[in-house]
Image (cartoon, rainbow, N blue to C red; front, side, top):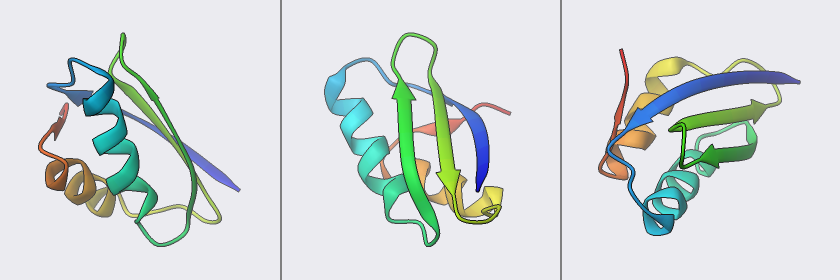
Length: 68
């Protein structure tokens, strides 16, 4: 098991959380996604470490950005 935490910018509501969760869950190997709207933190649990670029792409597909 591997866990990584990212900060997503631009989320303002529950729909934002749902969109990010849905896109990140589609990344191969991801087993769980926990999004905290207040902090913008997204915790991704996976079978093995997932390439950050894949997570970034999923977040961008949802319409948001990872904080650098």
